[in-house]
Image (cartoon, rainbow, N blue to C red; front, side, top):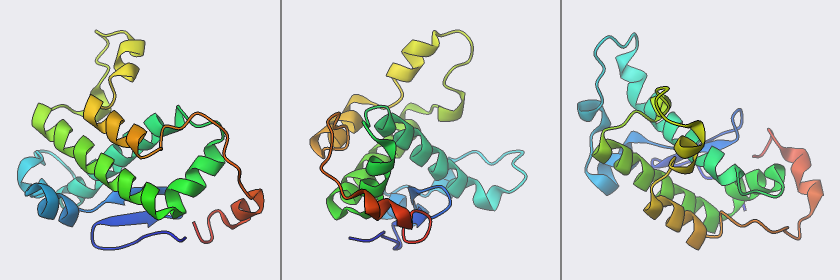
Length: 157
């Protein structure tokens, strides 16, 4: 068990999150993010796609952590367990695709006209939630876990 960094997904020791790469979206969804994201007025258009994918990651992780009994244990498992990483990658890809398909800005979901509770409940599409649930990432129980593994946080994961 170790973190995965390849051409499709990268892990940040700083944020403790995986983020998809532009190459993933191109290969699995046939989408060139630089051609579909609006960079008009962006001060750094060359980083827009990666910043957008970071928002997808942040949104999905926040959704998963709502279900976690122990955030640190869930964070460790998300970082290191191959099956969880596979599921996370699939869910992030589907969330990114859904956001593009619906043409919504996930950073501006609450424009003041909607109740915050309704917005939070609809952060991820049903198919993304199903991917996470089927992969065990929305488990609400307690894991049997060796807590000494958490001492390497920020070093190995």
